[in-house]
Image 1 (tube, protein in one colour):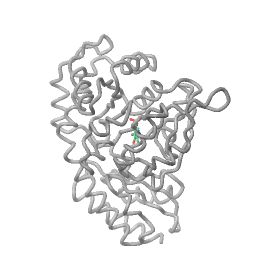
Image 2: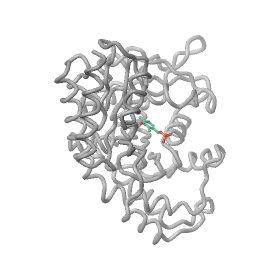
Image 3: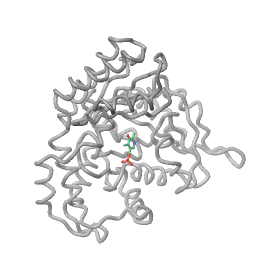
Length: 347
Ligand SMILES: *Cc1c(COP(=O)(O)O)cnc(C)c1O
């Protein structure tokens, strides 16, 4: 049986054009600093976001952790939304690798509210309480169902944080999707954040690759820490070429991923509007809330799997579906058929 894979946009395989870009890439040894393809690509992405420098990394988690490490000293504090990838899906790396503590704030429907984030902050707390030095913002918000953070809310947060000496980190694994959904220029996002991480291995379709963007000084230091974390890579131009191809040729296709997600969400909502919050389906992620049904996420994912659809059980009653460029229109039709039919049997 052919499986329709809606677990994540990370499942995308390199396209023929991308494979061609990989095979013709000029490479060197990046640990010695002489891989021309990765050097050019780091400069290109940095300038896209109005940043001085970039550092190519194997994963988005390393990029986030290098950013966090750069901003926060051991024993100091990062604030993040309660569903943020940096606190839920990086396995405690900020604590384990950098001695950083975290506290979380609530964002209504995972949309950041500048005032509630700042209300939790305690900068320069002295010798008794933990000092807040950075706040992370995730855009789009993965476990929030792919919601886009409002640029005005981000700018407000930046405006409130700056006089407190608090720096902002952007977990922009899917900033591409936010940009395609809103047309907000990358530079406008970049202007609010001291450090930015982006992923090429999601909707853009590269097999591997992320990047940290910041000032030249922070990136030079992050290069040292990347090696210390075991993340220095040699002929990495092969991967940078794939990522560059994805950014150049696949950014446009994200709009299709978004309309496909909307179609799936609308079909599910038409069965029972409690199953999906259509208001949050702004990009390529559909979160199904199974609380009103007779099943749970694990059992329902198994049921879909038996009918040829792969999904992600991310909470006891929360199932995630992610659209991406490897899905044909017929796959979407078929998935909608399987999902709606399966849901009807558990209502
Ligand atoms: C995918 C993702 C990352 C990085 O994940 P890796 O698997 O480490 O590449 C970081 N943040 C968010 C929000 C993500 O969705």
